[in-house]
View 1 (cartoon, rainbow over the protein chains, first blue to last red):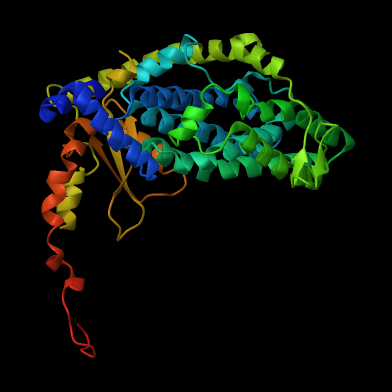
View 2 (view 1 turned 60 degrees about the vertical axis):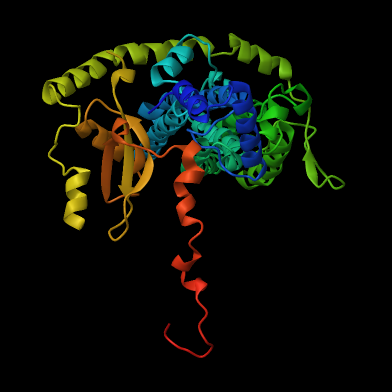
Length: 349
Length: 95
């Protein structure tokens, strides 16, 4: 695949026009495509800032999926039944899959997998702050599924219509799979809530701890969100942070009632006039502190990620050595025990 | 050797017999065998496929988005290639 830089050069040469004139024409074509709700595809011209914004956002999203495996994997060995254990393993595996879809989408913008991982490991790219909170009890697995994945879905469904094609396509796949994540969490909490007094208390405690961080997942209020306006204009983002946060609160209140659990907010009440639930102020100081690296688990998460990467090095090396040995001087596409696509096509003809 | 030294593969999945393979996404793998296995784990965790193709991304030749207009233009001015181009008297059946 040609790098974006190479494409730009080739385009200017083919055009035979000065770069500035060419860029202006491309900018107009890009603006028109976005305005017409068409998708921008990897080889299309796009403004550098649009590309950079997408790389930042998709990378952050991919890293969140990968780091998000840790707090839940923490409970796999202690799941209370084989059923719950199998579900949790499938969910954690899904998160890995989501990370891979998103890394692939980011790579279409001209960055590489290695660069993305380096930036995660060195803290130059972020992941969602929600994963810097600990999973103290089994009920936290339920609270994460219901609230954290619920908030993620609220954020992600509009991203299925994002102006950048590969990101939108990855989100379609992810949203389909997230639905199971949210429902298993809700069911888990419901089982605890209906259980013994201690189990009910454990579920309530988990919800108390995860509620406010989940609301923070939608990002700072609209008037303090530095990237929002431009992202909305580019149709990367379709709704504002506050709008999505409100939508999430409205969805959660009746769900909490069905769980027979309360949400830890004394100001939470239905506002007839607005047609929405009012809710109390969010502690943004906590949000910014966690973002700066001062959350309960920031250090632990990134240390674990680096360790997993380092300890997996021998597997990557062995696989590469095996591939080199078996491909030898060929182009890396040795015939396997499986039919090649070509053979299959021939057979079908 | 790092992961990025692994080539990129495009993954095509046939969702069920009778349908053609459709592009599902891409992944990195050191060789074709592992690309297939990774594709199975990544793109068919819920029974989305009965057959997978993996193709080295470097082996794909793509048309250029910049030449899109001239490249596809010849098709645009030949409406007579479409059945709706022809006037057929009312009442004529099976045509």
